[in-house]
Length: 94
Ligand code: SF4
Image (cartoon, rainbow, N blue to C red; front, side, top):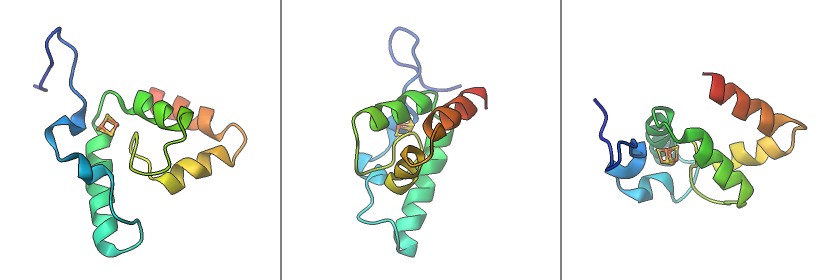
């Protein structure tokens, strides 16, 4: 059973971890990639994943992993027409 905040709302999956896990010092080394994979695996089980990603996209968050996506992955979404909407729809139906 997942932890829940007062009022019955589930807590973000990242709440139980050091926030620095979502902000690696880089994204290219093996150590960075391991850190990214761990954060992404935690995001994958988060009920707020879509909202988290939408927030990052709307606010132009340039760093960190939001909604399970790296900055490069988020930039890739904006470069493809309909990419953002398609991914969000796919995430919502998963
Ligand atoms: S999707 Fe967002 S709120 Fe959820 S665990 Fe990942 S960073 Fe935290």
